[in-house]
Image (cartoon, rainbow, N blue to C red; front, top):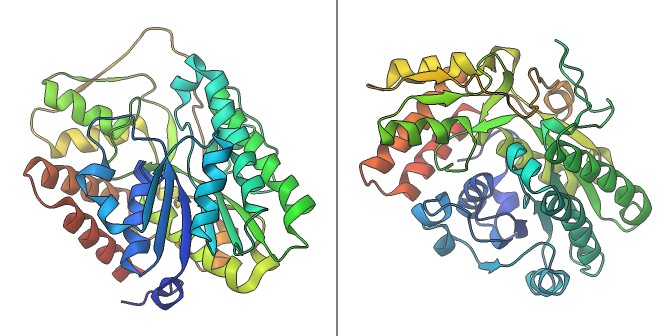
Length: 356
């Protein structure tokens, strides 16, 4: 199946070094790229949750190698990437949680900033690398809590440690692009996606996993900020953008070595309350209530302008918010029914590809 903007022939036989392959997004990307014939060499910590996509979908059996180690372990990282001899590097390893970052700021900065630097330094010693895609976040912007979506040229910022660590990672990416990679035929881009949902996410303090945990316990879902607006998108939406961008970087170089937003259309920018009400209407015995206790700061409004990706990459958001939620429910229901989750995930990938 050949999709517009995604070439299966391009990926067939490519060596890809993927950090964060045991995570939610990294797991889905491992499945997708492996299905196109890419040789995935993963580097990541063990998943922090007992139940996780990496194990439930049997991803280790689908990839070329899996190194379980810390991105801050310079010696281990250098050894793994040197052995992999990748054509393309996709950096997804991160400490990805806002509330966790308040409790563990040093770990957050070490992982998200120094981990990125460690990877870039390791890449400098591997002559096979041609394209690097660094995944950051929509939260890297200096959020002014306004109604307009953020463009790639707006200031970096962040009040909480997670958001500011990713803003720092963006600055690091820009500096390394200009200082070290621009004259070496190595092309480096960064990508900022929205709030990603989909099957296989069991992380703490995330809306969809929290919904299913509450459902399993027979308890109402506790919501901190029901009025908060987020750019919701199914996990396959940004992954398609990462794949397209990596191809463009590899084939066209400097024209695509910059920062990119890959966020949903405005119709997918809904409140947390809207999401929860939609899920509760679909799932028997589900309900929610607001947590009125004082909360740590989290952005109330956040939107991305993806005009650049739509115009220059040919990327488009394919699934409505409703379809994204339905696909998420479909995945979790299949898991509860003990289905083969690699097969379920591949069917969803093929369904998404057919819409591109």
